[in-house]
Length: 161
Image (cartoon, rainbow, N blue to C red; front, top):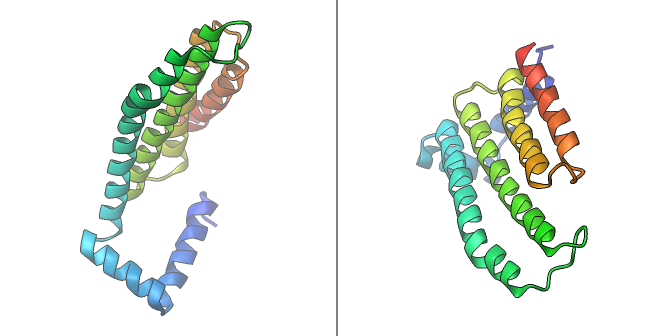
């Protein structure tokens, strides 16, 4: 059995799907031919992940976060609306990091380089910054930074061993 069982299982399912008949398969084949195959579809997905991430941060900051924080009627975390505002802003932009790492994973799939090491590096590049940002912004008081740093460290360790 290959080292990465999930990829092997996905490959088996893909082979069964390609050997099957039916309207779903025909639609998939038409779409793949229109955009240049599976590789191109992964690049398109990556583009949308990066674009949605940018739009999420920019538009969210302007249209949702800023108006919400201007209202001044936020619940208080640790007796401070400022802390609440920081938590909202950081959590919002951490979602953008998730979009971007998803885009990186699509690129790795397009290049057929999806392996344990590359996935581990991708997740480490997500969780380590999230842990550091949470640590710094909350001055160590938010409970998320230790698990984020532990997960990021585990992923980094897995990538280097």
